[in-house]
Picture 1 (cartoon, rainbow, N blue to C red):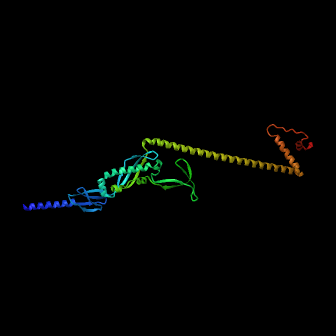
Picture 2: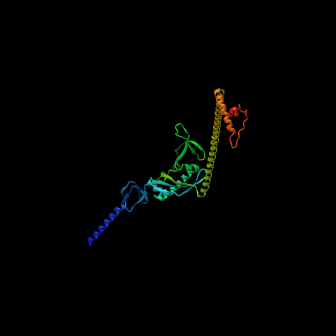
Length: 328
Protein backbone atom coordinates (compact mmCIF):
# COMPACT_ATOMS: atom_id res chain seq x y z
CA UNK A 1 0.00 0.00 0.00
CA UNK A 2 2.82 2.37 0.87
CA UNK A 3 4.44 1.64 -2.48
CA UNK A 4 1.25 2.54 -4.33
CA UNK A 5 0.92 5.82 -2.45
CA UNK A 6 4.57 6.57 -2.99
CA UNK A 7 4.26 5.95 -6.72
CA UNK A 8 1.17 8.13 -6.89
CA UNK A 9 2.95 10.95 -5.14
CA UNK A 10 5.92 10.64 -7.48
CA UNK A 11 3.60 10.66 -10.50
CA UNK A 12 1.73 13.70 -9.20
CA UNK A 13 4.99 15.50 -8.53
CA UNK A 14 6.22 14.69 -12.03
CA UNK A 15 3.00 16.00 -13.53
CA UNK A 16 3.26 19.13 -11.40
CA UNK A 17 6.86 19.70 -12.47
CA UNK A 18 5.94 19.14 -16.12
CA UNK A 19 3.04 21.57 -15.77
CA UNK A 20 5.26 24.20 -14.16
CA UNK A 21 7.91 23.79 -16.84
CA UNK A 22 5.39 24.08 -19.65
CA UNK A 23 3.57 27.02 -18.07
CA UNK A 24 6.83 28.86 -17.53
CA UNK A 25 8.04 28.36 -21.10
CA UNK A 26 7.53 31.22 -23.61
CA UNK A 27 7.90 30.73 -27.37
CA UNK A 28 8.49 33.98 -29.29
CA UNK A 29 8.20 34.10 -33.09
CA UNK A 30 9.83 36.52 -35.51
CA UNK A 31 6.61 38.45 -36.16
CA UNK A 32 5.68 39.23 -32.56
CA UNK A 33 6.71 40.76 -29.25
CA UNK A 34 6.07 39.18 -25.86
CA UNK A 35 5.24 41.31 -22.82
CA UNK A 36 5.84 39.71 -19.43
CA UNK A 37 3.48 41.15 -16.79
CA UNK A 38 3.58 40.63 -13.07
CA UNK A 39 0.49 41.72 -11.18
CA UNK A 40 -0.51 43.81 -14.25
CA UNK A 41 2.78 45.65 -14.53
CA UNK A 42 5.12 45.01 -17.47
CA UNK A 43 8.32 43.49 -16.17
CA UNK A 44 10.13 42.95 -19.44
CA UNK A 45 9.72 42.84 -23.20
CA UNK A 46 10.92 39.93 -25.31
CA UNK A 47 11.76 41.07 -28.85
CA UNK A 48 14.08 38.24 -29.93
CA UNK A 49 12.63 35.05 -31.35
CA UNK A 50 13.25 31.83 -29.39
CA UNK A 51 12.34 30.21 -26.07
CA UNK A 52 12.38 32.07 -22.76
CA UNK A 53 10.84 31.53 -19.32
CA UNK A 54 8.61 33.28 -16.79
CA UNK A 55 7.47 32.66 -13.27
CA UNK A 56 4.47 30.36 -13.45
CA UNK A 57 1.15 31.49 -11.92
CA UNK A 58 2.63 34.89 -11.07
CA UNK A 59 3.67 36.32 -14.42
CA UNK A 60 1.45 36.47 -17.52
CA UNK A 61 2.27 36.92 -21.20
CA UNK A 62 0.74 39.28 -23.80
CA UNK A 63 1.47 39.03 -27.51
CA UNK A 64 1.87 42.14 -29.67
CA UNK A 65 2.24 41.90 -33.46
CA UNK A 66 5.60 42.93 -34.80
CA UNK A 67 5.00 42.80 -38.58
CA UNK A 68 3.33 45.50 -40.69
CA UNK A 69 -0.41 45.78 -40.16
CA UNK A 70 -3.00 46.82 -42.75
CA UNK A 71 -5.88 49.01 -41.66
CA UNK A 72 -8.56 49.86 -44.21
CA UNK A 73 -10.03 53.26 -43.43
CA UNK A 74 -13.70 53.95 -44.03
CA UNK A 75 -14.45 56.37 -46.93
CA UNK A 76 -14.79 59.93 -45.67
CA UNK A 77 -15.80 63.31 -47.10
CA UNK A 78 -13.14 66.02 -47.28
CA UNK A 79 -13.44 69.64 -48.43
CA UNK A 80 -10.84 71.35 -50.60
CA UNK A 81 -9.72 74.96 -50.28
CA UNK A 82 -12.08 75.96 -53.11
CA UNK A 83 -15.01 74.46 -51.16
CA UNK A 84 -15.37 71.31 -53.27
CA UNK A 85 -16.40 68.10 -51.51
CA UNK A 86 -14.56 64.90 -52.38
CA UNK A 87 -14.81 61.32 -51.13
CA UNK A 88 -11.50 59.79 -50.06
CA UNK A 89 -11.05 56.05 -49.60
CA UNK A 90 -7.63 55.01 -48.31
CA UNK A 91 -5.72 52.48 -46.23
CA UNK A 92 -2.83 52.63 -43.76
CA UNK A 93 0.21 50.44 -43.25
CA UNK A 94 1.50 50.63 -39.69
CA UNK A 95 3.56 48.67 -37.18
CA UNK A 96 4.54 48.66 -33.55
CA UNK A 97 7.98 50.13 -32.91
CA UNK A 98 7.88 50.46 -29.09
CA UNK A 99 5.89 47.59 -27.56
CA UNK A 100 6.22 48.96 -24.02
CA UNK A 101 4.77 52.36 -24.89
CA UNK A 102 2.18 50.64 -27.07
CA UNK A 103 1.07 48.61 -24.07
CA UNK A 104 1.09 51.61 -21.72
CA UNK A 105 -0.87 53.99 -23.99
CA UNK A 106 -3.11 51.65 -25.97
CA UNK A 107 -3.26 48.64 -23.62
CA UNK A 108 -1.47 46.57 -26.26
CA UNK A 109 -4.70 46.42 -28.27
CA UNK A 110 -4.66 46.48 -32.07
CA UNK A 111 -8.27 47.68 -32.06
CA UNK A 112 -7.37 50.66 -29.85
CA UNK A 113 -4.43 51.43 -32.13
CA UNK A 114 -6.65 51.37 -35.24
CA UNK A 115 -9.19 53.68 -33.59
CA UNK A 116 -6.42 56.14 -32.76
CA UNK A 117 -4.95 55.82 -36.30
CA UNK A 118 -8.39 56.47 -37.76
CA UNK A 119 -8.62 59.81 -35.93
CA UNK A 120 -5.04 60.83 -36.67
CA UNK A 121 -5.22 60.00 -40.38
CA UNK A 122 -8.58 61.74 -40.82
CA UNK A 123 -7.25 64.94 -39.23
CA UNK A 124 -4.07 64.81 -41.31
CA UNK A 125 -6.03 64.18 -44.51
CA UNK A 126 -8.47 66.99 -43.75
CA UNK A 127 -5.64 69.43 -43.03
CA UNK A 128 -3.73 68.46 -46.20
CA UNK A 129 -6.68 68.63 -48.58
CA UNK A 130 -8.14 71.79 -47.02
CA UNK A 131 -5.00 73.61 -48.17
CA UNK A 132 -5.31 72.36 -51.76
CA UNK A 133 -7.75 73.09 -54.55
CA UNK A 134 -9.68 70.27 -56.15
CA UNK A 135 -7.47 70.48 -59.24
CA UNK A 136 -4.32 70.28 -57.11
CA UNK A 137 -5.70 67.26 -55.25
CA UNK A 138 -6.43 65.45 -58.51
CA UNK A 139 -3.04 66.36 -60.00
CA UNK A 140 -1.16 65.18 -56.92
CA UNK A 141 -2.92 61.82 -56.95
CA UNK A 142 0.09 59.95 -58.39
CA UNK A 143 2.83 62.44 -57.61
CA UNK A 144 3.53 63.15 -61.29
CA UNK A 145 2.54 66.00 -63.57
CA UNK A 146 2.88 66.41 -67.35
CA UNK A 147 4.09 69.89 -68.27
CA UNK A 148 4.92 71.61 -71.55
CA UNK A 149 8.33 73.23 -71.73
CA UNK A 150 9.36 75.87 -74.32
CA UNK A 151 11.13 74.70 -77.43
CA UNK A 152 14.90 74.99 -77.49
CA UNK A 153 17.55 74.29 -80.05
CA UNK A 154 18.09 70.78 -78.76
CA UNK A 155 14.42 69.83 -79.00
CA UNK A 156 13.79 67.14 -81.57
CA UNK A 157 10.55 67.99 -83.37
CA UNK A 158 7.68 70.25 -82.44
CA UNK A 159 4.91 69.06 -80.16
CA UNK A 160 1.50 70.58 -79.69
CA UNK A 161 0.03 70.28 -76.19
CA UNK A 162 -3.51 71.07 -75.08
CA UNK A 163 -3.84 72.74 -71.69
CA UNK A 164 -6.67 72.33 -69.19
CA UNK A 165 -8.22 75.58 -70.42
CA UNK A 166 -8.24 74.38 -74.00
CA UNK A 167 -5.30 76.46 -75.17
CA UNK A 168 -2.81 74.91 -77.57
CA UNK A 169 0.84 75.48 -76.85
CA UNK A 170 3.87 74.47 -78.85
CA UNK A 171 6.69 72.84 -76.97
CA UNK A 172 8.04 69.58 -75.62
CA UNK A 173 6.16 67.66 -72.95
CA UNK A 174 7.89 66.15 -69.95
CA UNK A 175 6.70 64.39 -66.80
CA UNK A 176 8.00 65.94 -63.60
CA UNK A 177 7.67 64.68 -60.06
CA UNK A 178 5.55 66.71 -57.67
CA UNK A 179 4.54 66.22 -54.07
CA UNK A 180 2.02 63.38 -53.98
CA UNK A 181 -1.14 63.33 -51.93
CA UNK A 182 0.38 60.62 -49.74
CA UNK A 183 3.35 62.87 -48.95
CA UNK A 184 1.01 65.77 -48.17
CA UNK A 185 -0.91 63.61 -45.71
CA UNK A 186 2.25 62.19 -44.15
CA UNK A 187 3.60 65.71 -43.60
CA UNK A 188 0.50 66.56 -41.59
CA UNK A 189 0.79 63.55 -39.26
CA UNK A 190 1.63 64.18 -35.65
CA UNK A 191 4.47 62.33 -33.97
CA UNK A 192 2.48 59.11 -33.50
CA UNK A 193 5.61 57.10 -32.75
CA UNK A 194 6.54 59.14 -29.68
CA UNK A 195 2.96 59.14 -28.37
CA UNK A 196 1.80 55.58 -28.91
CA UNK A 197 4.88 53.57 -29.88
CA UNK A 198 3.65 52.89 -33.40
CA UNK A 199 4.85 54.00 -36.83
CA UNK A 200 2.67 54.97 -39.80
CA UNK A 201 4.56 53.41 -42.70
CA UNK A 202 2.39 54.92 -45.44
CA UNK A 203 -1.06 56.18 -46.29
CA UNK A 204 -2.24 55.10 -49.73
CA UNK A 205 -5.29 56.45 -51.55
CA UNK A 206 -7.44 53.72 -53.08
CA UNK A 207 -10.13 55.93 -54.51
CA UNK A 208 -10.62 59.67 -54.90
CA UNK A 209 -14.08 60.53 -56.14
CA UNK A 210 -16.91 63.03 -56.03
CA UNK A 211 -20.07 62.61 -53.97
CA UNK A 212 -22.83 60.83 -55.84
CA UNK A 213 -25.11 63.88 -55.82
CA UNK A 214 -22.38 66.00 -57.47
CA UNK A 215 -21.17 63.54 -60.09
CA UNK A 216 -23.93 64.16 -62.63
CA UNK A 217 -23.55 67.95 -62.45
CA UNK A 218 -19.77 67.71 -62.72
CA UNK A 219 -19.94 65.28 -65.64
CA UNK A 220 -22.46 67.52 -67.42
CA UNK A 221 -20.21 70.54 -66.90
CA UNK A 222 -17.16 68.62 -68.12
CA UNK A 223 -19.04 67.46 -71.23
CA UNK A 224 -20.18 71.03 -71.91
CA UNK A 225 -16.63 72.36 -71.51
CA UNK A 226 -15.23 69.71 -73.83
CA UNK A 227 -17.94 70.43 -76.40
CA UNK A 228 -17.07 74.14 -76.24
CA UNK A 229 -13.40 73.33 -76.71
CA UNK A 230 -14.25 71.02 -79.62
CA UNK A 231 -16.42 73.74 -81.20
CA UNK A 232 -13.58 76.22 -80.80
CA UNK A 233 -11.13 73.83 -82.45
CA UNK A 234 -13.62 73.16 -85.25
CA UNK A 235 -14.14 76.90 -85.84
CA UNK A 236 -10.39 77.50 -85.85
CA UNK A 237 -9.94 74.60 -88.25
CA UNK A 238 -12.61 75.95 -90.61
CA UNK A 239 -11.06 79.42 -90.50
CA UNK A 240 -7.62 77.98 -91.25
CA UNK A 241 -9.11 75.88 -94.08
CA UNK A 242 -10.79 78.96 -95.58
CA UNK A 243 -7.51 80.89 -95.43
CA UNK A 244 -5.75 78.02 -97.20
CA UNK A 245 -8.55 77.78 -99.80
CA UNK A 246 -8.47 81.53 -100.47
CA UNK A 247 -4.70 81.50 -100.77
CA UNK A 248 -4.84 78.53 -103.14
CA UNK A 249 -7.59 80.11 -105.28
CA UNK A 250 -5.54 83.30 -105.51
CA UNK A 251 -2.43 81.38 -106.52
CA UNK A 252 -4.42 79.42 -109.13
CA UNK A 253 -5.95 82.65 -110.56
CA UNK A 254 -2.51 84.24 -110.75
CA UNK A 255 -1.07 81.14 -112.44
CA UNK A 256 -3.95 81.03 -114.99
CA UNK A 257 -3.59 84.75 -115.71
CA UNK A 258 0.13 84.39 -116.24
CA UNK A 259 -0.42 81.33 -118.45
CA UNK A 260 -3.04 83.15 -120.56
CA UNK A 261 -0.76 86.16 -120.90
CA UNK A 262 2.08 83.90 -121.96
CA UNK A 263 -0.24 82.12 -124.44
CA UNK A 264 -1.37 85.44 -125.94
CA UNK A 265 2.25 86.47 -126.23
CA UNK A 266 3.18 83.24 -128.00
CA UNK A 267 0.14 83.55 -130.34
CA UNK A 268 1.05 87.14 -131.19
CA UNK A 269 4.64 86.13 -131.86
CA UNK A 270 3.38 83.26 -134.07
CA UNK A 271 1.09 85.52 -136.06
CA UNK A 272 3.89 88.04 -136.45
CA UNK A 273 6.15 85.29 -137.70
CA UNK A 274 3.36 84.11 -140.03
CA UNK A 275 2.93 87.59 -141.48
CA UNK A 276 6.67 87.92 -141.86
CA UNK A 277 6.83 84.67 -143.78
CA UNK A 278 3.95 85.81 -146.04
CA UNK A 279 5.59 89.14 -146.55
CA UNK A 280 8.84 87.46 -147.53
CA UNK A 281 6.96 85.15 -149.87
CA UNK A 282 5.07 87.93 -151.63
CA UNK A 283 8.21 89.96 -152.02
CA UNK A 284 9.87 87.10 -153.91
CA UNK A 285 8.78 87.24 -157.61
CA UNK A 286 9.34 83.51 -158.04
CA UNK A 287 6.96 82.64 -155.22
CA UNK A 288 4.48 85.49 -155.43
CA UNK A 289 2.35 83.91 -158.18
CA UNK A 290 2.20 80.55 -156.37
CA UNK A 291 1.18 82.07 -153.03
CA UNK A 292 -1.44 84.22 -154.80
CA UNK A 293 -2.85 81.06 -156.35
CA UNK A 294 -2.91 79.22 -153.00
CA UNK A 295 -4.54 82.15 -151.22
CA UNK A 296 -7.21 82.38 -153.90
CA UNK A 297 -7.98 78.69 -153.55
CA UNK A 298 -8.27 79.09 -149.74
CA UNK A 299 -10.67 82.01 -150.19
CA UNK A 300 -12.80 80.01 -152.65
CA UNK A 301 -12.87 76.99 -150.30
CA UNK A 302 -13.95 79.09 -147.34
CA UNK A 303 -16.80 80.67 -149.34
CA UNK A 304 -18.08 77.24 -150.43
CA UNK A 305 -18.27 75.68 -146.94
CA UNK A 306 -21.70 74.17 -146.23
CA UNK A 307 -24.37 72.60 -148.47
CA UNK A 308 -25.72 73.88 -151.82
CA UNK A 309 -23.23 76.71 -152.24
CA UNK A 310 -22.45 78.34 -155.59
CA UNK A 311 -19.52 80.58 -156.24
CA UNK A 312 -20.26 83.44 -158.67
CA UNK A 313 -17.28 85.48 -159.78
CA UNK A 314 -16.98 88.59 -161.89
CA UNK A 315 -14.97 88.10 -164.99
CA UNK A 316 -12.58 90.80 -163.90
CA UNK A 317 -12.13 89.21 -160.46
CA UNK A 318 -8.58 88.09 -159.73
CA UNK A 319 -10.02 84.79 -158.47
CA UNK A 320 -11.86 84.17 -161.77
CA UNK A 321 -8.72 84.95 -163.66
CA UNK A 322 -6.92 82.20 -161.73
CA UNK A 323 -9.52 79.60 -162.66
CA UNK A 324 -9.94 80.94 -166.25
CA UNK A 325 -6.70 82.41 -167.52
CA UNK A 326 -8.39 83.12 -170.91
CA UNK A 327 -10.43 85.91 -169.27
CA UNK A 328 -7.34 88.04 -168.76
